Each structure stands twice: as C-alpha cells, then as structure tokens.
Image 1 (cartoon, rainbow, N blue to C red):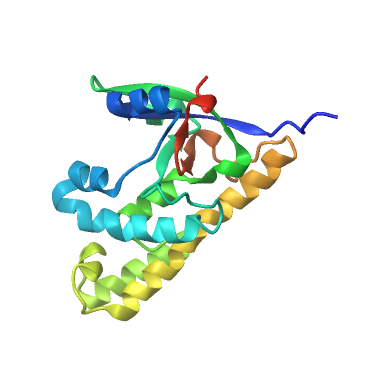
Image 2 (image 1 turned 45 degrees about the vertical axis):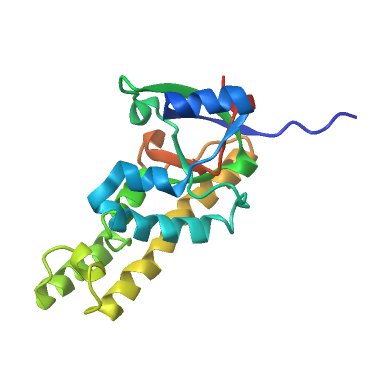
Length: 200
C-alpha cells in the first residue's frame, strides 16, 4: 500500500522577488529577523513583542527549523495577500501538519499589543486602562511601570491558537470549520518556511 495522502489547505502569500527566486532556486526559503527590522524600522520593538510571543508558542505546535527566525504569513483569502509592484502572489497547498492556523483579527489585536478576550473582557480591560489614565496599551510595553497589566495582556494572547486547533481538527476530518457565524475569510496561517513543492 502507498503512503497515506497528507491533507492540505490552500493558502496565499505575497512575497518579494528575492524570496520567490530563493524558493525556485533552493526549493525552500526562510525568514531572517533582520528582514523584520528593515521592514518596520521605528516600530520594530512592537513587532518584536508580538513575534517573540508567537514564535515561542507556535514552535510547540509545529517544530521550528533552526534556520527559521520568524514565520511566513499565509492567508486563506487571496485578498489579504495582494502583491505590490515589488512582489508576487503565490498560491500554496500546505500540508496541515506544517501550518499553524488562527484568526487574523486576533493576531492584529496582538500586533497592537491589546488584550485578547471576549468583547466583555476587552471592554472591562479598556475601562481598567482608563482608570489608570492609559490611553494606548502600547504605553504599557514601552516602559516598566505596569508589570501586572503587561502580564495580563500577554497571558491572554495564547487564545490566538484556540481557533486554529478547532480548524485543524475539522480539516483533518475533511470538513471546514467557520469562526462561529463569521466567514472563513479571516483564516490566517503561519509556516516556518516556503517550499517549492507547495506552490500551485
């Protein structure tokens, strides 16, 4: 009997020409941390907070290769991976055991250094920040004045991966789970590399 066929999910990503060339030339490409620093410059410290959390947790879900310093972002809906004049959109079929899935709206809250919770929890936390006189939650991370609030925010971020576990279980069964009543347009994924064999 042949090897059991691995289930895949179709995802899209927008990548620069050097990355696309590396995938074609070497069959694989990894993200280096220096690329993140070059891209975000003055706001790099914010992204480092979010990316450090993501990397430390995500590598427990999918093993991280030594060469991978940061994940590659992929999207179920191609509209989130629109290329510009310096990049190309790639359509990928990624094996489910090599991708980490989550809701991009929740990831955006983490990128903004916000608490991740129910609407009620987020509202209560916003009121708490107001009592402290804090206008933006990024102020909590820019200094050492609010360690308890910082811990509260960061501990909430693990909720990012809860939806992904549900999606993965459904996909493994050959079904597709929606985010409650929401559309599946908001499914984002992360992979530790890009492989030529995934490119459609």
